[in-house]
Every structure is written in structure tokens, then in C-alpha cells.
Length: 93
Image 1 (spheres, helix red, strand yellow):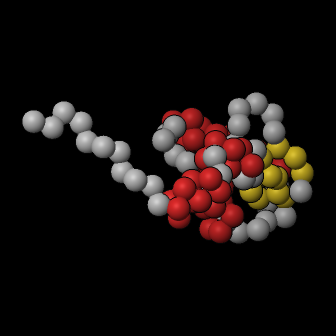
Image 2: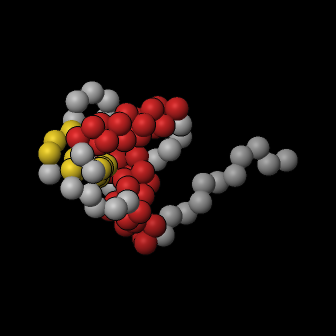
């Protein structure tokens, strides 16, 4: 009867990858969310919608959201860069 299996042996490559991989929490805090809109009012509305969506879906990755905002949105005249944290954190670009 086997009660427990021995842990898998780590190769040198897997140890190196683990040692050099960034902490996901640190990475998500360092990646900004890029927002742009036609004017200040539209930008604030977009930011509110994004914050509500992120709050309603806590399983979303802040890094994935940042990537989607960066590559799939048009660059409009009024822009902000926000940190994916609660509280104030937006500034003018």
C-alpha cells in the first residue's frame, strides 16, 4: 500500500526558472492599466466601468487586463495610466 509518493525531482532548469520568475503579485502591481477616451468625462466613465467589472470578477488577472487594454484599445486624446489597486492611483499621461 502506497501512502504517499515521493516529491518530483527538480531539474536544474526548473530550479533556475523558479528562481528567476517574478512574483505574480509584484508583477500585477507593476503593470499599469492604460485608459484613453475622447474627453475627461468619457475617460472617467470608462474608468468607473473598468473598476466595476474588475470588482465584480475578482478572478480576472490584473496583468491580463493590462495587456488587453494596451493592445486592443484605440489611443485617444485624453489618457491616463492607472495602477490596478484600490484607491487613488491615476495620473495624466
